[in-house]
Length: 288
Ligand code: NAP
View 1 (tube, rainbow, N blue to C red):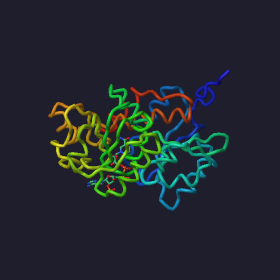
View 2 (tube, protein in one colour):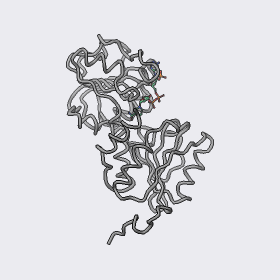
View 3 (spheres, rainbow, N blue to C red):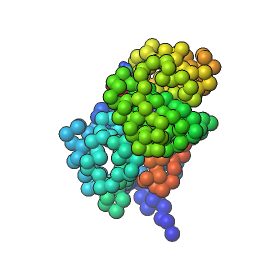
View 4 (cartoon, rainbow, N blue to C red):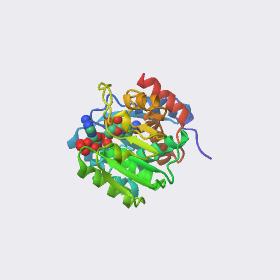
């Protein structure tokens, strides 16, 4: 029979540990999002934010095993660097080239990436299904790679990747083709590249606090009938989303991507999804 961890440790002085590793880390919403959910689930687990300097990534990841951590999340700027220090990495995390979740299983450090699945789960929860539909991605960094793989896996019929540095867009398109979308191409940063897209996803930081007046593409470029998703979540409503909504388009902000990537990380640590609604409320409170 499963033993109650709280009853075993009534003072809570011997919790299991989770962390988010980043640098800097002070602004991470993850502890505020996870900790109340862990407590409400009756799990005697502490989730802490750890600032890890770039030259300490290997030591920090080895430390997760040495200190008996259940696992960790990984955030900017370490998502790529941690791969070198893990025992196992999922196929999609390897394709994306980035890990945001580590689980320590039987002493083995297992890496995965829940950013893409988190984006997709939120998108679908909002009633938008990319299967069989054309999509466009703005940007070609880590978020774009995760989103591209998620859209390819979900069966998007066509993907266009627009980026100010075209060579990087081509790399993301190649990743999407490898993930199962044959019609994935880099496209010029122009209105024609968005024409016909049923979904436009901003994966650049353009529009993020404090640059509230910035937007990644002119509103006139947004195709009629498209859903517009902004992975930026500070502020909750970016200029891109405001302008999309003003044109009668579906406009969805990226806080849900953060929440779902966190809820899906629970699957790696506990074998079940975290409580999405509770985590959403906690993240929104922390953001406010
Ligand atoms: P990244 O690896 O640094 O990539 C940023 C991309 O945006 C690059 O392609 C870059 O173009 C482009 N870019 C940056 N500044 C630009 C500008 N002023 N004008 C035009 N393009 C610009 O960053 P990332 O990790 O992919 O993250 C990007 C954003 O995604 C973050 O800022 C965050 O808001 C969001 N994000 C959200 C979540 C979530 O859970 N909601 C998760 C991850 C990321 P070049 O290639 O030309 O440099």
